[in-house]
Length: 301
Image 1 (cartoon, rainbow, N blue to C red):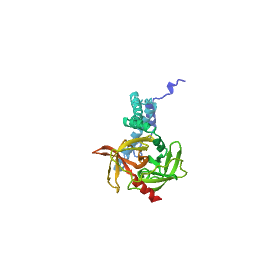
Image 2 (spheres, rainbow, N blue to C red):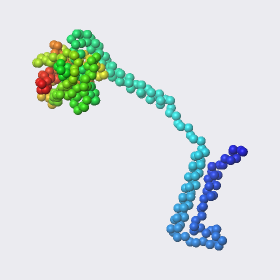
Image 3 (cartoon, rainbow, N blue to C red):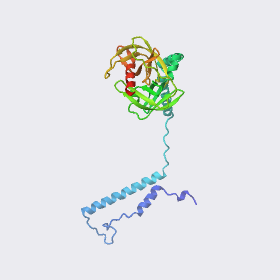
Image 4 (cartoon, helix red, strand yellow):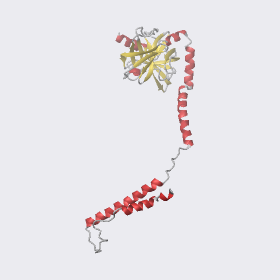
């Protein structure tokens, strides 16, 4: 049997189907023997028009369905290769841009300085007592001030957080509890159980913040950890919203340095808390005096 002879034209199939539809109307007497006509009411005329419209719509729908059934499907449009290459290049340069941000020239300089300073015995010893303070919102720096596990950091590092972890290099991580806060001076005191065997840092009672004197500090700037750096004191000044003065510092301070201890004469004389841009000095770091740190420690003892 010839397969082509049995395959009907889709349009012809629709016509055959249309012939089987009953297009007569209960009021249509044109085929009666008497060939008489009955006058239709306006309502009946409207019904007749609607019926014809429905039949016409049915014919169009059937014809469209049959045509689509036998029409070859169109090939999907392929994405041009040049678009794919552009997308790939964008994805490639995003991490590269991030790397240049982290390893910019200033960052490379403070890494070199940290490497030099870390060769000193005193700074290598201090670094063991400086920790990373981790929360669900980010990280900062903290440091040990007692053998029973008291850690000083900035209040803005740990405020409004539900989980705090203190991490020491080569020692491990310890869950911490917030036991003291000084929101005005941006200080916080944490407590960890079973603290590691590291030296507690000594807080200076009444240091002199002499302009141009050299200080050193240790923290966790950007994506780095345990970075030692140095700078010079600019001056002691007042700051909006604070009852006590703060110290301006000419030094490379970055995000993550919050809570870094500032050293002079083997003692902690302050805690880094922010960076600002001043018209008279440019970009400078700021630290809280050791007097405010001691006041917070005394308030919880």
